[in-house]
Length: 337
Image 1: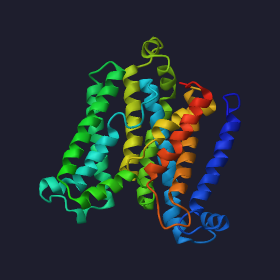
Image 2: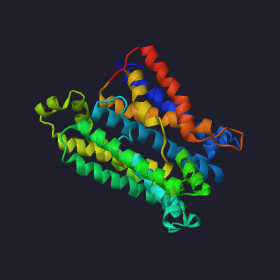
Image 3: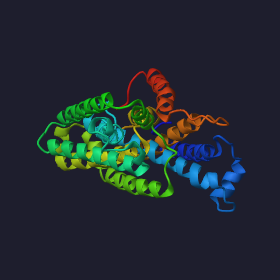
């Protein structure tokens, strides 16, 4: 794939996305023939497993993969740092702290949070509040700081603070509570109802909308902040919009699916290597498609087709993706940025 034929590249990725989407619905503990998958999707037949479990899970995989890939691209462009990912602002750490307070809090606060009362929505709300509070802190600090790299360091410091607080909570928690928290940390795509997917999608759509409005600013940031100012770009406003868009995408994904590793860091690099471009008009839709495809593939592998076991999605994303990135970088011998 090269930037000479982006239309062909997008066509290939779109077809691959459709194939992976259908395969993801078909594969699982019990394999479902593609013909029956088509019949169920077209409304000809009513398959409960497809309609209420596998279809929302496949849609969640698309939202998670594309959302993390795009938010990773935003952070790498804003900070001009190839190691920046969607969680460098401490959003994921804030969500983890919120969940830790709910799940592990009873060990420290004398049973204020009863494990038996913890529901899916309790976890989602706690993760959302945690990420939102960290976002507010980052935005408050960013309004006082001119240097973009300082915001990156501040985000990492917030992540360290929240990680330390989670460690304290873990020390006073029982084995059962620690196990529940660890399972949440593995990440999961298959526990969302249609109502949850709808709420997830609405917030995701708002984050994507902010991202689309920032395409010109993203391309300008690649030239450096001083050059961006000379072109009349409002640095503070553009930076704020990018940070909010990233936080909406990464925070919502962490709240609904847990902290998913690797995708946000690696997908932008893989896309740049394959498309050989830094133009965000091409990169954004490419990252969307590529992130969705990779996430669907990883989820299909994690399901261990025809088996009763499901592997942690976090483990699969790293085990499958990291070697691919290493191979691409060795093959290209240089990083496109």
